[in-house]
Image (cartoon, rainbow, N blue to C red; front, side):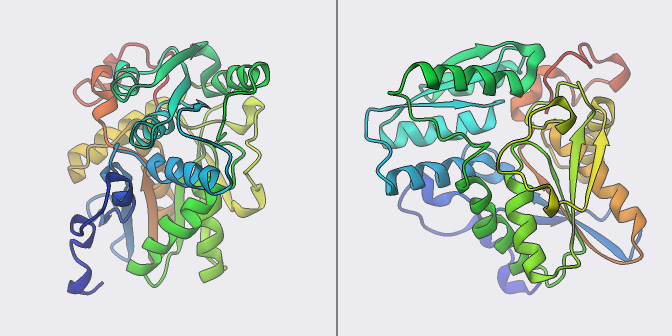
Length: 321
């Protein structure tokens, strides 16, 4: 990387907040790398306007719907979310003049509900124990019962992976000539599918690795495919490996990111960092890139950043990721 690209994500002039989405920093994590010949890089998606990678997806889905004439100002958009996609859509809808109804598990952290309300979204709560799968189920029922809703449906919308194919992956390749492995969480599958396809076109040897929650664990934003719902946009052939991560390890590594590298990240980032470190430990050399989906602001009320993992209340019942 040459000096001419340093701090590029911090600069620029944009005609609106929507144009400021993307071009997030790629930061090397020297303290967490297990081998001096293996470099670990984190893509800091919390630097997007509403603080998560989902700004990319929400913008791509709304842009596509507008281009295809599927929505009109004043229309109500309906979307199942664990928080971040809903918040991103709420900001974009407020900016563009749409109403938003977000369907979300009732056991997410309070900050996510507050942010949705702040941007003017209406929240419909689904059963918390069902996780994001329950939100999907309820939203699909609502959409079927009322045809006036437009549901972008991030789980089945090709604009989701394309946002990463045309954006996130290109930004990574602008900074690194070689990506030995890319690690991201398995949520809708959009990041892994979009980035994975683009990186494999650049180098078929690049390994695409999914960080996946244990079956039945409540993980905000991520899912276990063993729980029965495989988003339509997921093509499992793009994945080289899936590695399961417990809630406990996710929190331990979220705390490690903060203490070792000064990176204040959401809990799904801990799960992804855990897997990235494991992959890095198996290599002799190369670059391992992983995605940090959001900052930790939405999770402060959980106590994750200041409480020992053994003393955390609701370790198994809170929707963390």
